[in-house]
Amino acid sequence: VPELVDVEIVRRNLQRWMRGARIVAVTAADRYILRPASPATFRHRLVGRTVRNVGRRGKWLRIELDAGLGLFSHLGMTGDWLTCKTDAEPDPHEHARLELSRHGATTTVRYVDPRRFGRLVASGEDIEEWTRLGRDPLTEGLDAPWLASSLASMRRSVKEVLMDQTVLAGIGNIVATEALWRARIDPRSRSDALGPADAQSLVRALQATIQNEIRHKGEGEGRLRIYGRAGQPCPRCTRALTRITLGGRTTALCTHCQVRRR
DNA sequence: CTCTATGTTTAATT
DNA sequence: GAATTAAACATAGA
Image (cartoon, rainbow, N blue to C red):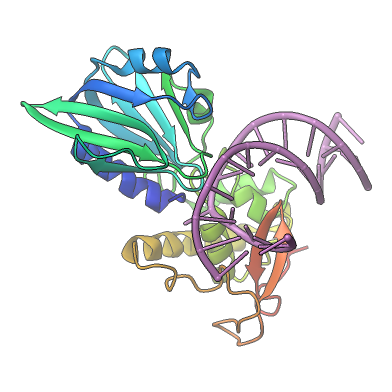
């Protein structure tokens, strides 16, 4: 459940379930996922706190509590927050459960994450992973001159820059792959070889891809044009899509209509 | 059995 | 030193 649009949907759910509620009980024991790693310390920081708001930057969630505390949550590859009945049996991959009370009504939410790449951080101040995030395309918007200067200041491939969370917060492998196809830019192009027109194309492509994700949320993968479709015809020029590895991530592209900038 | 996976960090290699 | 690549983390599914 990992790219920005999915995380935003989780944020809205959490906001609805938790805002204004008091945390009356916490169950959590996974020293790999929790920070601080001590489950007792982690639990004690949360119990008794009231949820003021649920925020998001990129792929990070921040459940804002009273007393200046925050519960930061990254979903990794397979993390998700769900609501369940208070007496529900633990899910096999459940790693945290919060019981909340609001106007006498009880709500239970739980964090489920089969691969356990996610993190839950209970902290009295904003964590570094949060503060060093770059611009969030959904909440802060994008503009071409800013992206152009960001691209020009780096010497990595354009795809790696798009996925750099300190530049753009929330862009993952799917959105980066799709947006570069829409913008007709070869993902291997060095970012400092892109000009203002390329930046403008990319801004539009990113916005279109993200809006398409919002529109088709929960509709499976039919929404994607080239991600995971290597070997199949390019939807634009019908030539077979190629598969490469870039920055350690699988990338689909059309070597015919995505032009490499030099 | 092998390969791959929406993420991120760290170690190793070039 | 910089840049690229591999490995690591855990688990499920094709």
